[in-house]
Amino acid sequence: MRGSVAGLALWAVAVLLILGPLASFLVYGFFSVEANDIVYELTLANFADIAANSSYLTTFFRTLRLAFEVAATNLVLGYAVAYFIWLRSRLWQSILIVGLAIPLLMSYIIKIYAMRGILGTNGLLNRALIMLGVTDEPLTVLLFNLTAVRTTLVVVLLPFMVLPIFVALERISDTILSAAKDLGARESHIFFRVVLPLSLPGALVGAMFTFVLATGDFLAPELVGGIQGFTYGRLVFSQFGLAYNWPLGAAMSIILMIVALVVISVALRVGNPRYLK
Image (cartoon, one colour):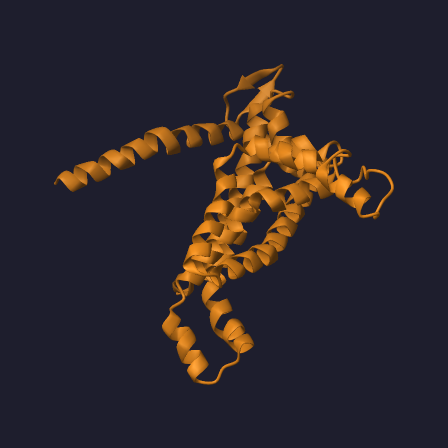
């Protein structure tokens, strides 16, 4: 009885503090704005405006492509890092995982500003290129464009890829690996036929996290993207700020939410065979 009451209380708190505010916010997507005043009448005009505006659609699909590129890049880099950590001793695994998790405890804005300092004309990367003789003067193409946004998101979101993959690798039983070796399998066969398939769910979870976070991010494009690095997240942010069109911003957010739910659903079905039944 007490367990049922506690469960109902938790659900009530979740509905009251999470689902309720989220639902009320999403409802704004079906309102409109006239003369800077919100009209509280249900309409699909915002979604029609988004579909009819080529700039909105171009920015939306460009952002999806950017998020896919970030997820694909992090999938390769993240798997390599996670596999490297997995092959180390327990002590080194703990040290490396803690080192990887420390950036997650830092403010997101601080990390973006750190990347801005690295990519800037007087930043660490430009200084290194000049010292190595690659260029004679600082490169300006490293900042305030989509490439800068892509690079920043890859670096900042890398832990979200590495940690799920490492957890999946840790779950692989030593017995399975020993059995494969006893049967005469080479290291390359063990990796491609045993390790990689068994760690695929972790890789899909990491790719899902990275893609969803990159799709809705607006701070990185705002701080390192400049005019050329305008993304859908910045477009949504501008509707709640300068434009003061909350209904349109909410409608754009609903579209992002649908994309996120679709990506999560696909990742679950591909990564877990029981969802295919």
